[in-house]
Structure formats: C-alpha cells, structure tokens
Image (tube, rainbow, N blue to C red; front, side, top):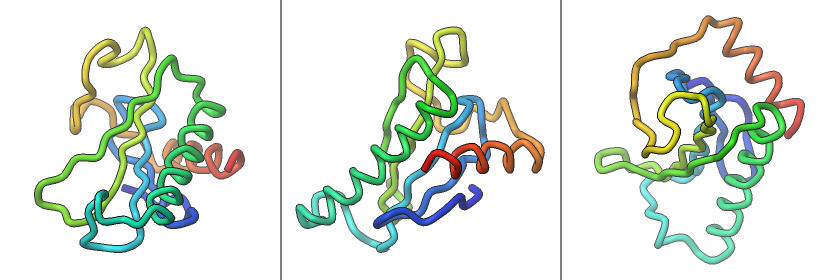
Length: 121
C-alpha cells in the first residue's frame, strides 16, 4: 500500500492491486484493537473516516457501487477496504477478491490517483 494522508483517527492508503480502480484502505491508527472494542466515539470517528473516503472515491471515480470490507485473521490492525465497482468492470455483481493480481500501476499512475483523492478530501 501507499500512504495518501492522515484522516481523523486513521490513515488512508491506496491499495497497490488496482483491479478495482480507486480501491483504498482506511487503517485505524491504534494497533491490536477489534471493532467491537472501540468506544462509541472511536467507532463513530472511524466510520466518519470511512465515509469521507467513500465520498472522495465517488467524486473522483464515479463508480456504480462501493463495497466495504474489514477482513483479517492474522493482522491485528483494524482496517477497511473501500472498493469501488463498475457495472462494466472487474468482478461486478460478485464479492470482491482480495488479491486478484490483475492490475498493477506505474508510480506515476498511483501518484495521479493520490493527487486526485487529496484534492477532494
């Protein structure tokens, strides 16, 4: 992943595998915490970061749908995958694959996405 910026209680990253153009990760800043262990205030702040990220993706990429996922058995770092999906794109109509390993961008292409996201945050 490549860090984009800090949000309220998390860090925002671009996911290097870009089969889902504009896929980002919102990573909670505190380690070793489960979602259900967050206080109401912490949970609401994290979900605000997730919503802020989704709004940025919607503005920059105009996807047909945005999927949200929080998966991990071995990584003790709470995070959400924010996955834009497109009606004519990869995996539309099915559950997103974590690592389809289909699309890797150039450094310049990653930087272009990062700049577009930063501009609307």
